[in-house]
Length: 75
Ligand SMILES: [Zn+2]
Image (tube, rainbow, N blue to C red; front, side):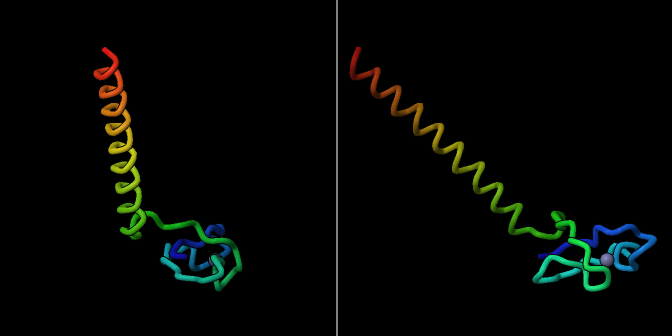
């Protein structure tokens, strides 16, 4: 995971420098505190969120179309 050290800037130099750390175990290599995920640099997560919103919108539109057709047949 990419992220920043969540420790106090006084206790860990990684937290003080706001260095982006890439650790497989999600822990700071200096103080072993868990990392805070970095959302600004992960473009894939942003793209994933856009894709989910788009698919949700498509699903809602399809549902409305199905309901409209259902009532159009009934009336
Ligand atoms: Zn640290």
